[in-house]
Amino acid sequence: MVSVTKRIKMIKQPRGGYIHPKSMNITDLPKTHELYSKENINPGLVGTVVDYLTRFQMGAYVNDAFKVSLIGASVVNELSEAKEIINKIHGLDEESVFYACQLVGYDVCCLNRIGFIPVKNILPNKETIYNIQEMVHRSLLFFKDYGPIVLEGFTFENAYTHYIHSGDGDFLTETTLWDFKVSIHNPTKIHTLQILVYYLMGLRSENSTYFESIQNLGIYNPRLQKVYLINIDEIPQSIIEDVCENVIGYDFP
Image: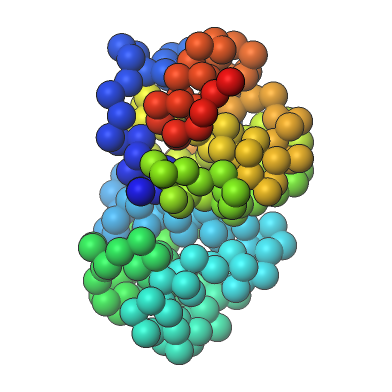
C-alpha cells in the first residue's frame, strides 16, 4: 500500500490522461507584485509552507495548520525541537516564514525518512521568503473570491484500500474540491488524476457529506495566478469507474 501521490505515479494512464489537463477551464487572476525567479529551497517545501501558512492566516490554530509537521517531528524524536520552532511562527513576517520553512522539513518523516535532512539546514533566503509571503497573500485574496472554505487539510478515513493507505487533500469550498500547486508549470495528467482520486475517495470517507455537494474539481496555482476548473459532469462515467476499480481499488457495482 502507498500514498495517493505514489499510487498515481505507478499508473499508466490513457493517452492524454484520465482527465486531459487541456480540458480544464483556465482563469488568469491579477498579479499585484511579481515574484523572484529563483528560490533556494526545495519547491515541494515552498508549496507546503504556502499551504500551511494560508490555513494559519485564515484562522486555523498554528498547531493544526502544521499538524503533519509535528507528527513527522515525533517520528524522529524531535518533537521538543519542533515545538520550539512553532512558537516562533506568529504570522507572515520574515521570521515566521523562515521558521515555517524549517518546520515543514519534518513532513517527509510521516511516510518515511527518505529525503529528510536536519531542519536547521533549511535556510530560505530573502527572495524565497518574499515569494512565500506573496503567494500566501495571493491565496488569501483567491479565497475571498472563491471561498469560503468548508473543510481543509482533510484525510480519507474509511476510504483507504489495499492500493492506497494514506493521502490528504487541501481545501473544499461548498461546490469545489481544490488542490494547491506552486509549480512553474501548468497542471499535468498526474495532477488531474490526483484530484479526481481525492474526490472519489472523499465520497466514501467519513467526510462524505461534504463531498456530496461538490460539482467541480479545481487546481489553484498562486505562483502562476491561474485557476483550473472542470465540472465533474464533464468526466465520462467510464472514466469514473476505471479510476475507482483500477487506480483506487474499489469494487464498482
